[in-house]
Image 1 (cartoon, one colour):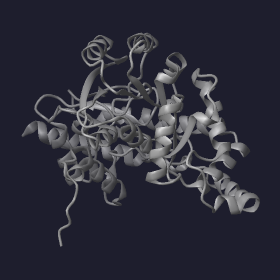
Image 2 (image 1 turned 180 degrees about the vertical axis):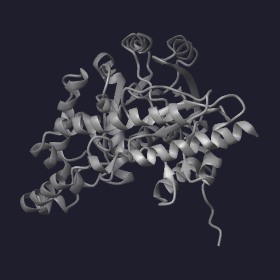
Image 3 (image 1 turned 120 degrees about the vertical axis):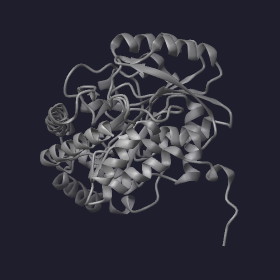
Length: 398
């Protein structure tokens, strides 16, 4: 039997193909996977979560197991609103926060609320592949803007904004950008604020990695200067646990907030209230900043070890961007090898990377690739990088 599917769902999904491959590689016990963005299980606060779960069931079991409000658990939303003060944003209220199924759901919510077919969206080039995948569902015109070592290319951004004043929004990841791992300098941050002030373009700021900085200094959120023109996305997936799928969007424009809530109510009614309440209890009873410091120390060691292995095992001509935080390294292959070739040959040898192609809106057969250092043991990192080095040598010698 063949059902009559929508044209929207039948469209080719280039990013989705890679996402499925990444998840499959991560789930395979026979593959060393540097492809995904998995936090290290060592960082999961299991005993503390067990205690929080028991406390929630003992004190609020009926509420935790019942339907709830679309916006999310009030105690959790208050905690998130207060947390924005650490990013230089004051005056955020609990009502400004919508709890979502990971920050990824917020991308779909923004797309549904703001995009009609043919509308323009500005993005960094490259950018998060699932963001592209989410936006493509609504058939927009995606306008990529190049990024440099210190953040987005402000000259090209100013040109893109001037040429596309009717763009609905721009999606940015200012701290440890996915996939490049780059962060915006203060100078770039300030120029971006100048470019967007006075326009009617929403700035959609995604900050999943900001709290994983183990060197250098983070810039404040764009929301500090742009106010309701900036919607801020966040997640607990990287700092507490990804399995709960709890993220949020901070939206201070009342009209947009109401539309986002209306859409979410039709999509899932509300995010898992039991998980929200357990997480809120965990945050109330534990020092999450101390927990984050331990995670950062672990990731710093992992990043330094992977970079050392790359210097040791990868052939001359393979370069990478040193990182000060986050979960990824961004590497570039020498002329003559594409990242997709390395990806395919690496899989044959039991190692998965994420080639750069799905992070670009238009570029294909690129030489850049992303690798994750946070989730593997030191032994696995060394073995995997050594194999990648051997594969690179084979491809160079063909």
